[in-house]
Length: 125
Image (tube, rainbow, N blue to C red; front, side, top):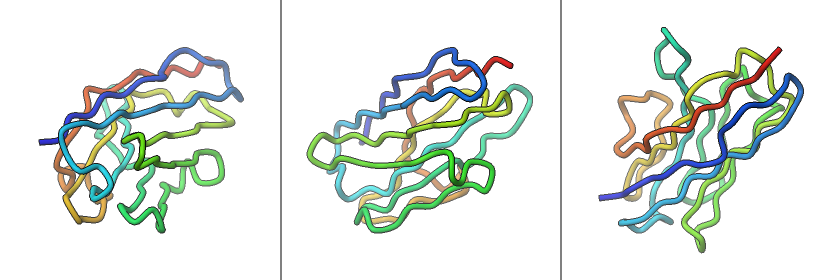
């Protein structure tokens, strides 16, 4: 079983930046595909970014491409999401998710195996 704990959420103004971090424990982190998802009030959970367990592949939703960057540190068992040029429509609870072992992340929330409890990001206009 993998446990995931997100941190780094908060309130930021439009155009600002935040860095989310997800700490993993309980599994062989380096073998898990990792993803960040978000869920705004009244909306379905949606894919934001993913990174393969080989670290060779990253993937982004069109809405965040060029503004967000996902990275992972397999030595520290962490996966981060750097968010720049934030917009009010980025306001949501952000979740870290894992799939594995030796499985690629899935853009579908239902396809991920493990989830954190989420961290709230609020972007004010």
